[in-house]
Amino acid sequence: MKRFGEKLHALRKQKNMTLKELATELGYVAHSHISQIESSKKKPTVELVMKVSDLFGVSTDCLLRDNLEIRFKE
Image 1 (cartoon, rainbow, N blue to C red):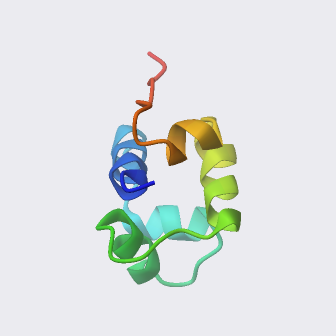
Image 2: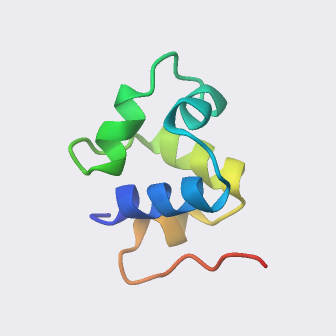
């Protein structure tokens, strides 16, 4: 789970979303919490992992397992 923030960042960038846009999509008022998760300063909650999984259409396994890579759809 150490790479969750890195994967979240990659997903956000791939969709050309700002931190603020992502925070809004995930139900946060401010983007600082998402920024701290992307930089691995905070760990995500189970609820956040599920929301990210649904938003980007990736499995929770892919997000949480460090040995699995995200496969972007072309």
